[in-house]
Length: 129
Image: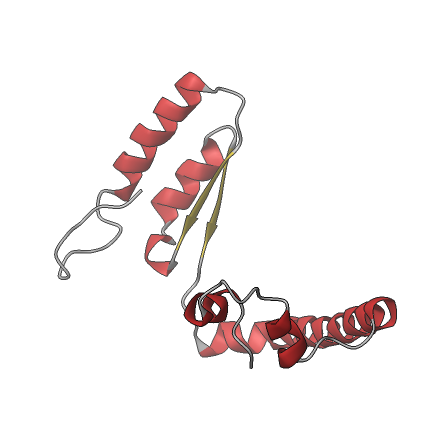
């Protein structure tokens, strides 16, 4: 949900009441549906999180503002995740190349676009690096 408001107002002001209203309406119509609430760090507040935890079929994911303690605590996991990602990406790239061969060149891809298609439109569809 979004609400237009001045820049000098707390972004989470009134969020709990709005969430309660909207979630109540959704659950009245679809009582078994699972609802995920996502918000940035402005919504990472005790009242919102407690309400989400106490409400059946409602889960939440709120960002946390970064600070030196969180960075220090998360370094091990973020390093492991980045390493894992790099390894899986390399494996996936090698698998695709083994199955499909080398990727086509820009000229080969350009040749696939019919002459009747304006070049500007073709560039939007595929823009060479």
